[in-house]
Amino acid sequence: MKLRLSVTVPGVVLLASTLFYAAAPAALDNNALWLPAKYQKLQPKLRQAALKLEATDRCDRLLRGSLHESSQGLDGAVFLLVCRDTEFKTYAVLADANTLEFAYVKYGQSMAGLASGDSDPLLEERLQQLRLECDKLFDRKTRFMKNLQRFDDGQPQMTRGEEQELSLFINFDAESMQGNLLNYQATCTSTQVDSPISFTIRARKSALR
Image (cartoon, rainbow, N blue to C red; front, side, top):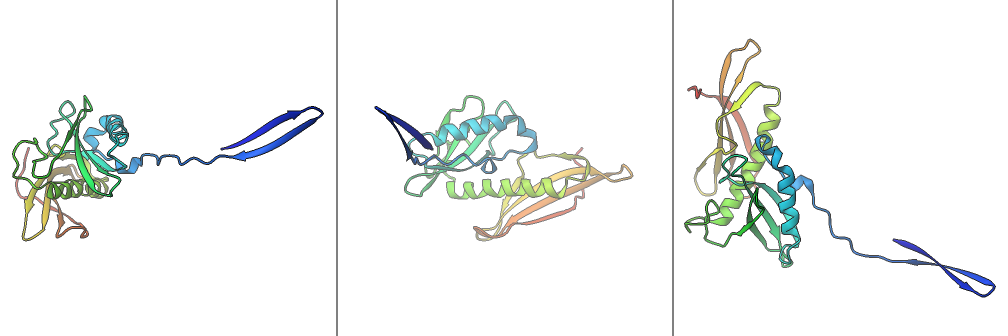
């Protein structure tokens, strides 16, 4: 910000220009926040939770925010927030979508419920990221389909393959141009950490409605 200062001396007016520089905090990247179409009404709440977490001493930068797999509809939604601290270490936080209360996930705890202790948080973070990318691909690939209906309530079925392979399955129906019911299953697969995600849509044999 630039300030123009005027100093009055008897018979003389002195003008001086002084520059002040301040390091402004980085604005929250809205592209880092994502919710499925069914939960879009909660987007303002997700942003509030992200800003609240980013304002804490530990969080240096919020990396992403999304819907957690334990969510039970709009009234029981839970956000997953991932932050990076000043030592460049990432950590995950769960936030109640209604109260915006935080639950800090410790290593060895299950992020779905925070109760058991038989879950790997790094694996669950990777799964959450895969789900986010899969939903984006699904929305893009099916945007022209008529009367589309998903059957997973925004929570795809997951299977683990050999080594680090993870797959998500989305069962859904749509209608043909002639109005015929079509049964589909979309599959998202990540073979290892940071690998490209493969996305396919195939006909499904059985009807679900």
